[in-house]
Length: 195
Image 1 (cartoon, helix red, strand yellow):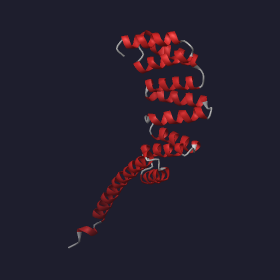
Image 2 (tube, rainbow, N blue to C red; image 1 turned 180 degrees about the vertical axis):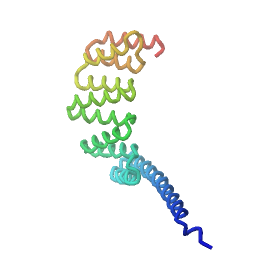
Image 3 (cartoon, rainbow, N blue to C red; image 1 turned 60 degrees about the horizontal axis):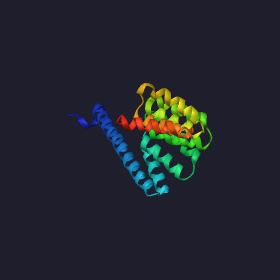
Image 4 (cartoon, helix red, strand yellow; image 1 turned 120 degrees about the vertical axis):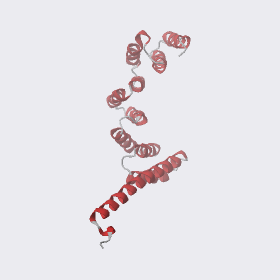
C-alpha cells in the first residue's frame, strides 16, 4: 500500500498550506513591527522606530502605515529628501492615504516647490474633493497667494454649497487677504446657519 504523504498532490497541497500560513504570519508580524515602530516614534526613539518600520517593510513592502511611519521618522531626523520619498511612495502605494499628501505638501512648500505642492493638492482632490480643496487653499496661503485662495473658495462655496471647513478656510483666506470684515461676516453666517 502506497503512503498517502508521498503523493505529489498531497505534498503540493501541504506546501501550499504552509506558504499561505507563512504569508499570513508575515503580514501579522509586519503589522506588529509597524505598531512597535509607532510606539517608538511617539517616544521619540527614532532609531528604534526606524528599525521596526524597516522590519515591517521587509515582511510586507505594501504596508503603507509602516512606509508613512518611516517617512515621519525621516522628517523628525531632518532628512527631508528621504521623508518626501517615503511619503510619495506611500501615496503611490495607496492614493487614498491622505496624511501622506499633507506631509509631502509641507515638505514641498518648505523647499519652495510650490507647483509640485499644488499638483499634489489637485491629486488629492481626485481622492477626496473637500480635503484636496482645503490642501490647495493651504498651498495658496502658504505661498503668499491669499487672493487666489479667496477666489478659489468663493467659487467652491457660492450659493451656500460649501462645507463648514471650506467656509472656515474662506474666512482665514479673507483674513490673510486683509479683508477682516468679510472674514467676520463669513464666520457669523456660518454660526447662524448652525455650521
